[in-house]
Image (cartoon, rainbow, N blue to C red; front, side, top):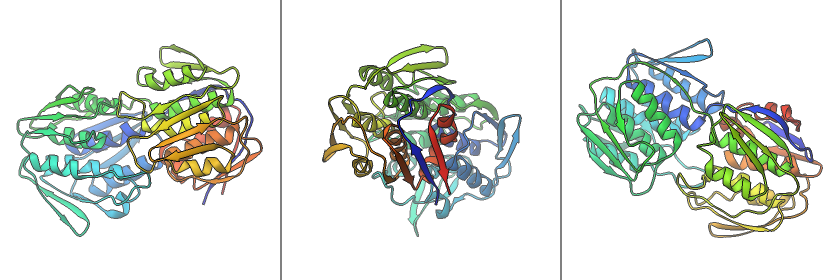
Amino acid sequence: MQKLAIQGGIPLRGEVRISGAKNAALPIMCAGLLTAETLRLSNLPDLHDVGTMRKLLQQMGVAAGYASNEITFNGGNVANWEAPYDMVKTMRAAILVLGPLVARFGEARVSLPGGCAIGSRPVDLHIKGLQAMGADIRIEHGYIHAKARRLKGARIFFDIVSVTGTENLMMAGALADGVTVLENAAREPEVVDLANCLRAMGAKISGDGTDTVTITGVEKLNGATHRIMPDRIESGTFLVAAAATGGSITLRETRADILETVLEKLTEAGAQIKVAGDTIHLEMKGRPKAVNVRTAPHPAFPTDMQAQFMALNCIAAGSAMVVETIFENRFMHVQELRRLGAQIDVEGNTSVVRGVEHLEGATVMATDLRASACLVIAGLVAQGETVIDRIYHLDRGYEHIEAKLEKLGANIRRLK
């Protein structure tokens, strides 16, 4: 099992290019199932989850090819409508093939995804939505088996905001008969990116980016070319790492408009931020100030940045409260931060972090994707060496993270 070894205490300096967003790439790849024509995608990140999704689509019969920095998907010969457990168990986003398969082929068999380390991610919203659109769904031997001659447009209200639920039903509605209205829909930028791709394929979608999305079904979708949006969580992670280490970095090929709450919190922590076009420059002089964080669905503070800001607060001046409202088990990095000398108290969904002058290197274990990023940031500021075990989580969501950090001056290496 691979590990990362970090010698801390070096401010990050330089430029880094931001990769395409994993959380936009995965649903957009699934959109290739909606058409028999070719979908060309650029800025697709080189991540483990992206590779798993590509293998899943190829197993179904989707042809995948590479040409001039683009990946093409052609669903003209899809003959297998099943997503098996051995793939779904490693990547919960595989549930996103359910809507497209039922919409285009009238049938899908998708494994239930099983448990998730950071908390409950129920699929009942996907199932109820498809049932409202006329699908007959049965749960058999751990699989969701859905059938429908042709889905019908429906008005669907989400009890809780669900990003993948919104995406799945938006894709299903694109080929349904009639109008589908999604209420209390997710407003994340990645949902908008999927809608932009679907519109390029001929879908009729409006309201994406708001809590009410309207989809008017069409008979068929065509091929298209689409560039995946930049990863706002990778952008935020590098900015927090620079702020925590007292560095000065410039992000290239990113977007400030999808990072507003993160940039506000970094400014509150004392960082100087300048935005120009697709670049963001951050400089931190002196010790950061502690900042309170409360996660909530977009456009509020993203849960995927909570752990990184907790690492920043560990060495900040003052105390801060971190409140997690999305996932019930998303404080598993706290125990590992304590091993580095952090002072954190947890009660329910609230953590109180009292900043210390410095952390001390130790061996820690990553428990999930964003906890891994949190521990990397903590290792970058800690005195001595920090060794992070189980870093396969990082490779699911950060493209070549140690190479990018090395370019910024970090003393980091991968141990095999």
